Image (tube, rainbow, N blue to C red; front, side, top):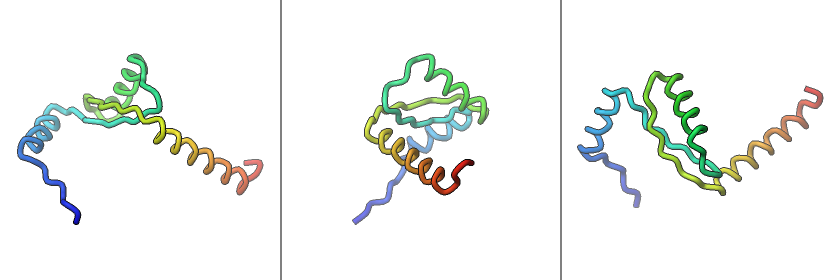
Length: 86
């Protein structure tokens, strides 16, 4: 049986505080840890696009990143076969 996720009042309050302060929580999964300079660039770009201060939770998961790359390469190969010379 599936349980529905229920937010606690503390989580709801924290969300409201972040919204009021214009802070955007973001989750990022990468194949390798990002350096400080690259992480700062991403935070700045995301924040600039949405007008928020960005708070990143970074997770390193090589397998997930590898699967995403394989899917992208496969789509590109199919596209090139479907539209040669494009």
